[in-house]
Length: 201
Figure 1 (cartoon, one colour):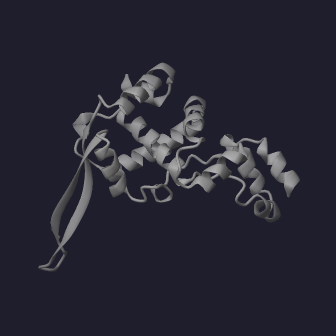
Figure 2: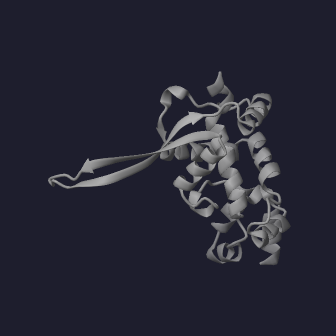
Figure 3: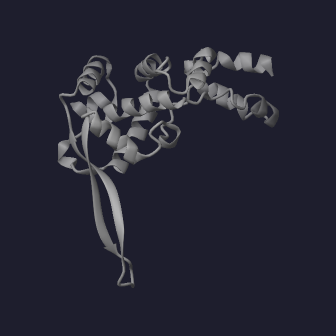
């Protein structure tokens, strides 16, 4: 098992995952070793990166937009980043590092592994410190990166005189003068030649 894990350490994530599909015993031996999951602080940083990727190409004509729709675009941004060497290198440099006192033991284990190329850059709100889109929206609204509005309305139940209360968080404004936005835009403009650059053009 140690030899198998040692060999996989040198493989790309795609190749290492293919090894786990070779047979059940190899899959069991590599369980928890490949891929590497991000602790909540790193998952939060990934969410911020993907939100910025969405915001720098966002068209204000789409406002207001449900936060759930923004999150879908963030997940697509994560997939693009994982497939692009330059974006992935930025993710590894800015996220696979010590990010504060929270979840210290999990962060130490991630950094001790020394395998940023085996991180699964899959965006999942439930594995982050935010846990929900509501908390995500509230956080970045409080940081003044975006403005979010909690919309409530009543919807009539089909074939019934009763109604139910519906709620949804909406993105209503992008703060393009925010330091995080400006810093990410500058990096993307100087390093990006992929879909983000094409969208800006």
